[in-house]
Length: 95
Image (tube, rainbow, N blue to C red; front, side):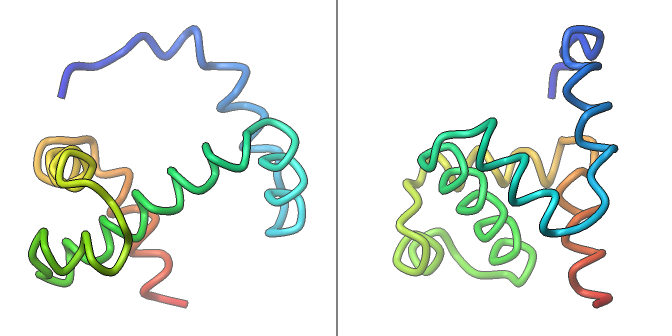
């Protein structure tokens, strides 16, 4: 994947790093995102989890409602991305 300029997102990333727990995350993301944006991000994370479990696009689409375009994009991130999904999914698997 092509890298983007992180400098324009620096304040946002710094803000996220200030969050201490799930409650802080809920407050921050409810304020900064629309419900649709939160739904989309949650759906992508669920798609990534199912892809890592070896589910096929049809199964994932049926379970999550995600389009094949969304599933394909998430898969591209899993294969060619920087490992962000794996960082989060790995942490969830170890809970």
